[in-house]
Image 1 (cartoon, rainbow over the protein chains, first blue to last red):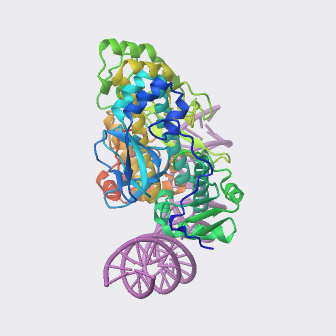
Image 2 (image 1 turned 90 degrees about the vertical axis):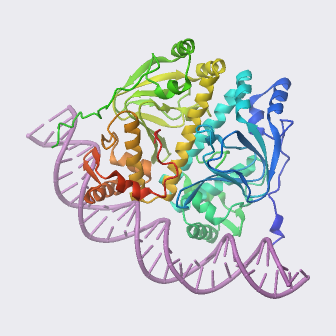
Length: 256
Length: 256
DNA sequence: CGCTTGGTTGACTAATCTCAATATGGGTGG
DNA sequence: CCACCCATATTGAGATTAGTCAACCAAGCG
């Protein structure tokens, strides 16, 4: 029954299409439609990828801002801390997603970014991306789109935190993860949570006990199975019904 | 005592410095440090300002995205709606702030934007701003900064919605408004709320009754006076104490 | 000058948090 | 390789907060 889940990493159903020679930035490169020439310019700017171990900080709030980072593999959380130690997880980030966009405004990172499993990122020195954007309009445009997408994502989190009940938040959260896994070629209804109940709670504006209880209730309803961090969506439809109506744009393939 | 408050608009302490000939975009122009030549290029791109009456929509979610808008005068709210009619106010916006950045990602506006009083905006056709940015690097950079700032703002709203109690939310809200008024040359401790209790509640993730009760309690404590929409901060320090610790970056001069 | 809308207040209910006890698993060091 | 320990998760009971429903009031508008 309990297969050796210790390193039961989510299994890709099909291999990811990688378009950018230097690193698998589907999100960054694919939609732009760069020429071979432009692609190599981009490759020249993208720094060697960096590996992080579980628990390691990619950057910390307050550090000078130099680069944004694209997740190649692994899983990250970002959080803003408050003086008295409360901390709010502002998002979870997986492959193809960009980290550090909030640092541009003040030339300093605005949040902490921490690897939740061993991970690999590409560093994109921002000023070089800016100048490259001037030469390659489609790249510039795509960068604006990525930033805008982050704003859209944040709006849907606000909707979640401002309007939804605990069950709805959890359902939206699970379905969002499911969607993002599946667009990356992983199983949609069978995955491993990379984060703790407390981190989920922080993100969803709930206490860890509430997260735990709500997951148990979902399981009791026969909607999901929970085995520690291993989640299976048995009746995703039931979850979808729960949030039908509150959706807004909770259903994004992008970061959350 | 109660002066004819009907049109008691907030009074500027000093006149705003206007740097851009076409429209008062302090936020957009001042920090960039454009040359006279560049400034006139920018002026050429910025469309004639548009006037809106109270209650009018600047744009609606789903409409094709063409431009972002800079608030010249007046007051706006943005909200994302959900299918079943719930709506979440995602922000309030005053002079110098940009609206519509969330539309870039999908080429369609992602929220409604509604004037809360008679207002005036400048329209900035986005594609022309993009190409102008290619010619004027500092403008491009500034645009990235503005988008990043929006992301930072959203993070602080998440912190507010995820971590704070009703009293703390209201205190943070009032102090944020106060700060923004004062940086625009209006009185910091004496202002008119442009939005209803319900809209405040929607933004803060509270019901209107809770907003009302909490304001009453603040007044009973002697911290503020409330006369309908006219608010005076009598002991701003008391409010600051309330949120000391949860701040994160709740104290921004920018939109909220 | 009545009517409609928005705001206040109260009593009650429901949801979530808090505190606490108990399990469980994974990691560590012997 | 095993035993132990600590961090993490589950569950329960009771406290607290905010939501709900409802009555009432005041203001602004036509």
